[in-house]
Image (tube, rainbow, N blue to C red):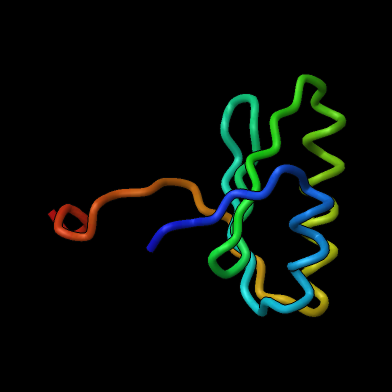
Length: 80
């Protein structure tokens, strides 16, 4: 399933109200957030920026299902 990437976190925030499940993954210098078929790749230089985004994601747990993704593997390799 392809993901349509938006330009900024603000663009994703406008869309996120229409979604029930939010997935995110923290990498070394970016956070990838997906809501439905729309996603954003947020790059950061400062750890405070990262914490601010994670705090916002945690605040969404009041009304959304927020899932932190730690790794991605192909389906056929999952149980091997």
